[in-house]
Length: 622
Image 1 (spheres, rainbow, N blue to C red):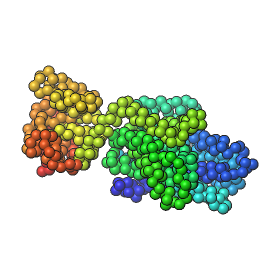
Image 2 (tube, rainbow, N blue to C red; image 1 turned 180 degrees about the vertical axis):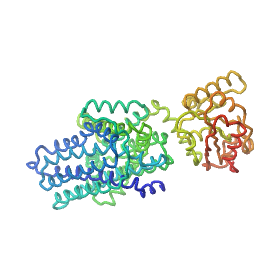
Image 3 (cartoon, rainbow, N blue to C red; image 1 turned 90 degrees about the vertical axis):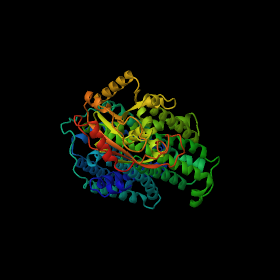
Image 4 (spheres, rainbow, N blue to C red; image 1 turned 45 degrees about the vertical axis):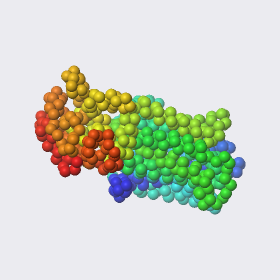
């Protein structure tokens, strides 16, 4: 939380945060006020029926994301970003100026056209909004920045929707709406004036008006990296679910909960605040870095609390108008709790994915990949509307049954993530292990290179050492393990997923194969972890380092990273007080530290030197 609070005091983040939050807020003020005016307008004042108008309005706002996102991605990479944002915000002022006039005149046709233009402005703002963050924030701030962005976005959606309801209920509502949309557009532009300079990534990019070709090119760029493309699919699935739930809240409340508009606002508030809380919690749980193990946790939560929402729906609506009674009624309270935690799970799910599509791609492709994300988001949101129509109008499911279907579909998506992307399972299991058995702190892990082969050497205290280090390191690690442990029935499949390198010290053929596999992994740019002591310590002290490290480096000269584990001696999995595991636990949730030292060149990394460096890192803390 301290890191998030610090970002909100920095000029490189705060003006941007205010600009995007005000933009999202104004979008929802404009759109929802218009829809409320339409809902209560006389038939003669509308150019078409109110139902057709509302569905057409939703489509017109999303349509620009199909049409213009690809161009927006190219422009965001071609031009300096702070100036580009200011131009987009100026366009918002012009659109809202005409919007103010249209509100005053109650010209619904013009308002519909302006809604399309507002969607266009949002489509051009989307890629630059997310592509700016990696340029302005440090790597260890990126998750915190995204958590704050998601928090600001969903709170803006909440307050914009509530604000629209307040405006529409006032006398002279059209004048208040006109003043509000223009005021917030101006405030958004003024905040954008303070966004620091962010250089153009590729000024040589050519811009041509070829919608189909440019869209295909943008999507093809996103598909080049499977991990990035799957992250885009995950984000789009989140928006599919979000749109599905939010669309049904009014009718769900009316038919199943309580025929009171206050309850609709409570549902929207709980869902939005839940996503905000989940986004911030994700930043804390992942220790301010991209932690893929958090994603399945969020996905599982969406399934569990979505299913519970179906079970918690009252058999009959609760007839009360008292606000306090609505909040505390047992039959409604369980719905509210599950909906809140559904939002929390969504926030945990979405933040690492947004961070991944910002951090992983090459800088020159970042904006276009985010543009592709916006295109797919729009497709999935339209699909959610189609699914809602089919399920609720054609098949005639009830809304709680529709929510059950969403939970089942999300469960299938979760299983797909597990089996299609094994790294999600690996990181999830490691995260659970290292956050339930221990309190793990990391120090100086920036010494581990972001790419390329490297050999990690560390002291060996418990059977959990490899898991703790793997969970702490942001990159996948291949560790060398005794063959008999690698073949244990319950966990051998997990070891296969993590590509453990088994070794049997009594068989020369096994030793040769293991050294060859280690050499191939290092040559291919992977990280390999070894415990040069060869066995668990029996007294808490660091034993002599064996010659295996020297043989590895002779064959594959890569940087060697000394590491040390602190605080594990005396734990259940150590040999303190007898055999490891075969004893009564004396403590749980121990505080453990994983410390990395500066890389050592392979020609300098002798067994003796590396033992000294590991001992220095460990210090007196066993």
